[in-house]
Amino acid sequence: MKKHLLLIIALTTFTFSFAQTEKEKVLNTVHKNTIEGHIYFLADDLLKGRQTGTPENKIAASYLANTLRSYGVKPNPKTGDYYQLMSLLEKGKPKNLSLSIDGKNIEDVVAIMPDMVNYQDKVVFLGHGLASDYKGKNVKDKVIAIKGGSPKASDPETFFGLRDEKKELAKKAGALGIIELIDTNSNVWNFIDHNFNRTRLTLSEETAVEETTQTGYVWVKDEGGTIASSMASGKHKADLQVEPTKTQFVTSQNVIGVVEGTDPVLKKEYIIYSAHYDHVGIGSPDATGDTIYNGARDNAVGTTTVLSMAQNLALYPTKRSALFILFTGEEMGLLGSSYYVENPVLPLEQMVYCFNSDNAGYNDITSATIVGLPRTTASKNIIDAATEFGITAIDDPAPEQGLFDRSDNVNFAMKGIPAPTYSMGFRSFDGDVTKYYHQPGDHADSMDYNYLEKFFRSYVLAGRMIGNDPVTPFWTPGDKYEEAGKKLYNR
Image (cartoon, rainbow, N blue to C red):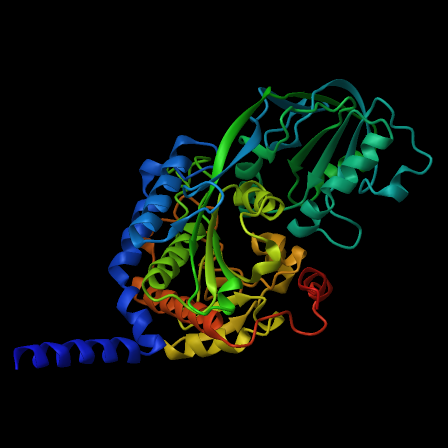
């Protein structure tokens, strides 16, 4: 009788486990307390903003690797541990950076491309510094002053988007340096100052290559355009000094784990779950004197989203396999994902979807914003999963920000892999989004964890639905990356 009772209990337990719904599997693993624990650790002052290349960034990587280990996630198949190491070339902020115009010292100046400049002479004003502005002008061995942006646009996206073109034009013309006058407000300028007056990193080869022809490039805050107007109307002299620091090599790391799928055929296909775990480190103080840019929203939240997915799939694998990648160096120019797509640990053609998670902030706790939602055929899975937990999945409401091309997902998209980015809900890129975006006030204790629990559960359920869907996800017809996808998958 006792044996029969034990058999009945065992069968009942098995039947209950087998009969669990996808939602129940999510509810079993995704809890507010766990979410808070991860975010509070990653955004703690002790990690000093997790800047790539720092010891604190490595501590964060160790925490992530050992969390994956504790869940039972298998390590990087190429190394046997949870890391993918990469060599980066580090260039610190200039030893000396100073600018005066007609003897007046300019305080708001940053070195966008800090090549050596030692110049005291007349400045050539050259409009916006575009190709047409060089006609009939001799700027060899001169420093040029130009207006930010273009005749058609004067906004941050245009400032950043034209940098390389303006640099190459000046270099080709033999100019020694560029002073670009940026008409912008203090909020945008503080972001520029923090991101450029600091150590910078690039992917490196084994040896550093120094440019034989240098053209130093600085930006000057010129709110209202008064400096530009003055320089356009007369002859002026500048004293521009830029002394860059020596470069050195540093090592950083992506964190990688794998969970094998359950279906004998579909397990050959992988869903990538990705986020970056680095942030921007220590910088200019805010009004309270805080100098640590903790990065709770950007991107401890995204990192924890992926950890939540890993915990769930380690316990309840989907039919497709899962590859978890936590990137370093996103804030330095998508370095970790750029390196990964050129050095994948598994063939890229087996990666059928990249479900990235990145955040700036949120101003709508009733939604999740998926940048690129309608661009892949998995959109219904994502929408249905959000609905299941009482929030609404919406598309990017701020296309002018170019967010799809500003996170790690774009490196996978360019290879052809469908790759949206899952973000906390925002209806516009302002308000409580910009209030915390790359600011010292982005602390763990400033977020709504009841909302985050719904947000995380929606992400995990969406991943499960995509991982079990009998139809392999792809780009929607006509997408700019559709052809790259056809090439990658031989479709």
